[in-house]
Image (spheres, rainbow, N blue to C red):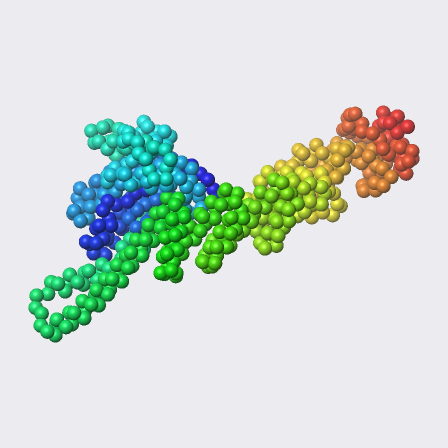
Length: 551
């Protein structure tokens, strides 16, 4: 779930519900298609996103509050232009309500108080008007749109009074004319054929009414015709009843969608639950249920009530076992719970993440989180090696997402400093994905007298890449020679072969100043060192100042 500040816009057609009872199905389809044909291109032109259409309504979002208001103004102007040449029955009048604030993005939908308030403002907006809250007014560019204050309103569910503004749509104002005349969408422009969401009206009910009107127009009635008419009328009445039921069902479904869009998840769930019993296979209803259940559970997760979230998932799962969101919600709740555990129970959190990975073995995010906590929270050679193994998997599976992640780079550095092996697949992976970015760090570390694992990994990566300069090689073998102890045999042969070769050929001028200054303690010169005798002529030739350290 992502939180983002957006401007939320609701629009709907004036008197649309009443028109459905007095117009044919074809008429309503034509009105809705024209509505979408006229307005959708303007939304796209202003950078808006059509979150959803609910019957005759649009729910839109905009990154820019100014663009949201400008879009509303130009939508109204576009419709006034259309209405001036349309018959009364074809006219379309809308109201536009806008609010700006933080919303929660869940899939392709939006939720939160900002959405709820925009829906409330729509309820007080007159047809032909563009109303918006003070939150929008404060952040929009007031030099682009003429505005005036409407007043303060109190809305259900909103604790404080809200100041409402409107756009002054006066043709006598130069600023308004400029808004309307600039970037207007021509009459001929249509993005595509507008699709009308199922549920805008009841086709069964409208068909029954049309058939009844045709029957009432008949003037001649004989007994046989009367009998047939009675039977037909009974059939039509039955069809009308079914139509009214379908209308009632779809109206309730649309109301549930409005509740959900306004952030009233609990009430939306109650309405959807009752509708589910009437038509459990309705795909539109199931999608709404999926969104409502997601919003319900994610509210618990956001509040860190993870056990409550899992209980809610179980309850929803018993009632709606086939909802696609349930599996993802379970995974997300468990992952969030594990993340929270790292605040106080690191081992418990690691165990929870490990169990999650068993249940979701291909989930890259779980692998990434487990790797991160092994490297950062646990520490030590074992956890860091486990972290590197997992980091390798996620980066190689999805380099576009994970390769540039700072946590992975931190884990890479920790691994280089914690573990060295002559044959190491992880080092080849690091060289491939991070070699160029780590090059300054590796050059600095190749002669590190204290961190032998980091030193040796740096030497190996630079050598294999052909990027090891003579001075860096000299510093590396100097550190290896000086830090050699009784039990230390790694790079033993290479170190003495390197310096004995220099004894024969002489120290090149380029290496005269390559030795570290000051020199580290020469452990190899201690009397207990088995290599003391072999090392003595090397130190005497190249590092005479270090001789006194070993005495």
